[in-house]
Length: 167
Image (cartoon, rainbow, N blue to C red):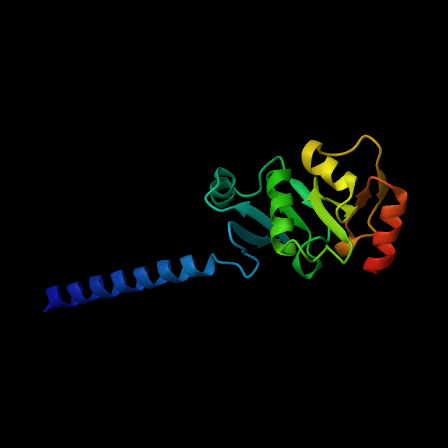
């Protein structure tokens, strides 16, 4: 009789353990995950990691990395977004914008180094940026863009037009 109780207890224990591991795995998914990215909310801030990355594994095992990149208020629901690399942060912000949240009629946008670059659609400045990166001459408006982002442009006129149209 004792053996049967022991076997039943072991089976129940194994079943409960399996249920809890399935439960914890499904709770790992965040409502802020997007294709290619895993997210974790910690202390009210949204941590973003490229799926399967070493940074994600490190975060799960050790917590916040010593080196981190932050974009205040630029995430979903106005959350501060943090990542282990600026590249991952920029890719995530572009992914959540769907390439269109910041684009408005007549303008194309790019997120780079946590800042929103704006260009008039089809402009030489856009072509230059896509081929060579940031221009030597740039105009900046700190914290005035969507989600409080800093906005940059190759001309003051483009910057002013975008900001007046976006708002």
